[in-house]
Amino acid sequence: MMRPHRHSHPFTPALSKAAWLGVLFFFLFTLAACGGEAAEPTPTLDPVAAAGEVVFRRECAACHTITGSTVVVGPPLMGIAARAAARVPGQDAQSYLLTSIMRPDEYIVEGFENTMPTNFGRKLTGEEIDALVAYLLTLE
Image 1 (cartoon, rainbow, N blue to C red):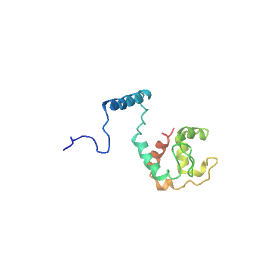
Image 2 (cartoon, rainbow, N blue to C red):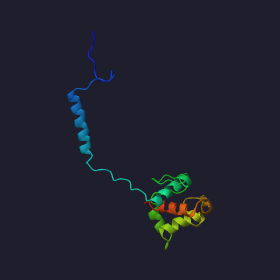
Image 3 (tube, rainbow, N blue to C red):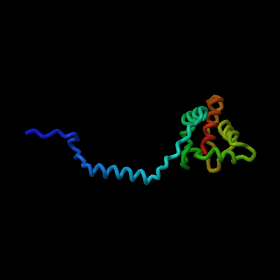
Image 4 (cartoon, rainbow, N blue to C red):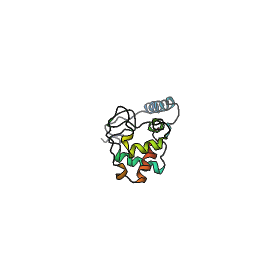
């Protein structure tokens, strides 16, 4: 005697209509509990800052983090855009960051040693340095 063919997986029991309705109700209830608000999307970086992110990941990420307060070697850079603007009286954030990259021994962040490489002026192009600064200015 042949058994009728079932369309379910042989190791998964078939769900009844009541069970499917329960799953659907749970799903809808969960969505409603979320408040219906979508998370704010991550802003897209402009092309220069995006190029700077590439430079950062290649040259800086081994020593600096950009999220949280975790210290690898150098200071974490989350919020650097605001801190850089207030670090040296009379100097804007862009100038501070540029100086920190080109002449890192001029500004040593308290609690850190002077271990920043001093060869970025020779190693990176002017466009790469400008892009890196533009990227760092997005880290608010």
